[in-house]
Image (tube, rainbow, N blue to C red):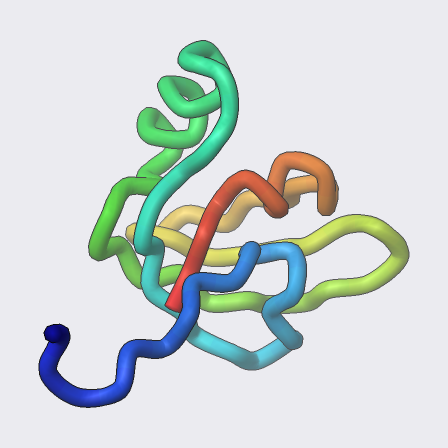
Length: 79
């Protein structure tokens, strides 16, 4: 049995502006996972959501700012 309450992983696409979350895993095909890993979306990375609106999400990760569409962001699972 796991210790303490576990927060369920939720897609990055559901994160709100101003929220900082941690990547728990990346889903999708190998090409997409590899691309996101190269951008820094790896397990344990902190992601700060700058804004989220109109089907796009702007985040900062490892000092870089990226814009992702919600379809891609839905493959990044966070806690």
